[in-house]
Length: 423
Image (cartoon, rainbow, N blue to C red):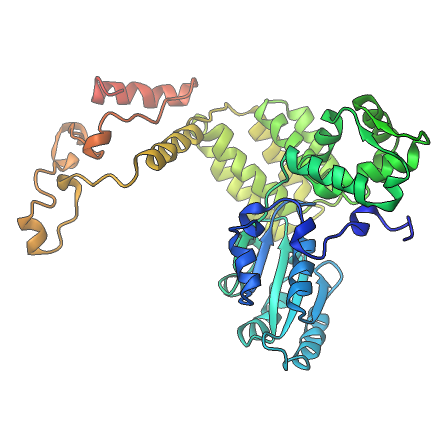
């Protein structure tokens, strides 16, 4: 086999026996695996970061089902390509379930391109498998999304990455000849970041750049080779998630200069502007929150403006909101509060709603005291009256703790004034 073929492609699995990760989907009890084995394959969207096996999973499904397999890339294909592919698939309709149409980066398809898929998916001419790194609820049109099952693929664990690396060393004929030993794995795991393709690319790069046999992989060796060959290592744009992480952390850390640097890196690399704007929306709620509620409004305004204006002018809008968010007061109290509340619900289950808080639209419900003894706050001085609003077994639960900032101090003082002991 030619060593010009990348290691990730040489080792691409044809069945689940050599597919690493995603046990929640394709493990022994995985719902997707069961659906495939039963021949009841739905149209689906595979959502997850790069290198977690989206394309491989689509090809395994095709291999197992022996259905015709067509591939389109949202970057290079238009409506005409979609229609031509669907016409080809129609000729294969003597198969029980039609053909499989795999669309990589489906989030880059325009509305008209996605519309052109609807009829074929509805009629069963094709079983659509779309792969995306973006939240499909933002980028896939509702009519198409409603006809697809969304499966979330996760980054590979350290254990899964090491299983894959050791499998590659043992099974790939090129690597076998190098007698490779992974003596230290911290650097190779850190630079892989849960991405199967990355760890295979690193092994490939080490094998091609280091002459020694046996090849002993250490942390220092990985750092040295990757630093010298960063362009080769990242030619596929795999630093996408690293850079957005640095960008968000710089804003969270109130460093506008660092945030602008990472923003410039993303703009220069052709990053999707809406992706940046969406992450700023999330940050405005998660990291600034109640310390400056206007931040979320301005981030939403920036997101809408970017959608309308586009590049290059929208870089100014992104710069403005980046600086504003970086220099704003910070609070994660809302994020922590809902996180704690959801953990409490998961722990305690469906506690009953107190009778006085229940709705009573019928006479029977009123006879059962639904809504009885409820005190209407607006009937009391200051539009407040103390009463229990939680299930009886949770009446002492507490989730919101005001952040240490001027805005939330007002909230805290008010709550303490009206609730006395509770806050």
